[in-house]
Length: 79
Length: 137
Image (spheres, each protein chain N blue to C red):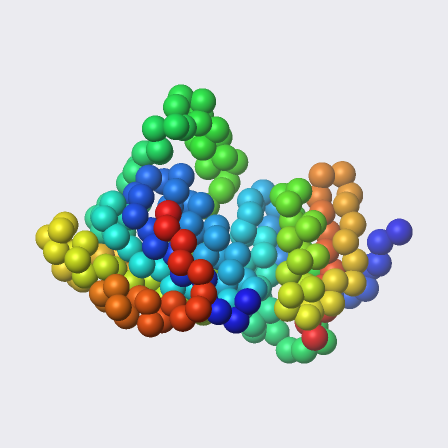
């Protein structure tokens, strides 16, 4: 079951290959206040591990990582 | 990962430039500084009037490689120049032209795409590189 909490922002990275999903998310994160939850959509299979690694490295919180049909959905909170 | 990632770009084909752009962008997204030093054919590819042109692929690509690259671009993958442009918005990426290669190619700074931040020699590059790895592409 996926969480449907209201999110502050969304990054639609569907159709984009590495490293764009991460780059676009990192760019957005520079502009938002701490505590904001961002929803990222991606179709690049590498993005699953990339977002695990990116959140671990940057300290941001990966709340959820799910897949529906061919779309990966990540919920990330800026710490 | 506090030490910068330092990339010396020598090859000017689109495949190697794209690989370099991905490495740079990934580092930038993790907050790691990146120093790029453009030499020879990589520098030539950053000419303002050539940056968007087809720079070909390494010979090992062959026809099958050409098709694979074209298919991925058609599917929406960004060019290496666009990847670098977006990654630079994160801050932390510095792209410098090798002054010796500028002489070799008979070009001036105004001939280069704005992606290039300046011109420097190898000594400056090494000073900025610190203890981070230097990778030659």
